[in-house]
Image (cartoon, rainbow, N blue to C red; front, side, top):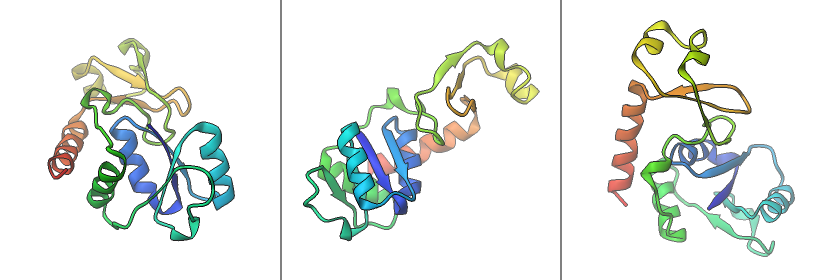
Length: 152
């Protein structure tokens, strides 16, 4: 399932990416632009803006919750959103691009020495070139995800 999130859902877009979903974020797009893009790319528009209306011919999900946990629960309830742990951390949280595995030797000069010595698997965003690896932040995020999903 692919999403297009409106300006008030930037945090949710990052977390959907962490969960492995294709979540395009449009912070400055108009209603018409968002609906057109969603139709072209077969995306579900996710918004908190009730002025979006339901007559645009596309799929629109309205969220009422202000908090991340509530928003994810609403998406699960409205769309039957299924979360696949094997897809966690598979997309760039900044660009939304799928991450690509890269050889360790390629990133030696791009990551801290301790990280290079202790981590064997690295991924890179093909768009922004950011490098990702499984570090302590990964465990912290997994704890947050587990707490979110256990409530579902």
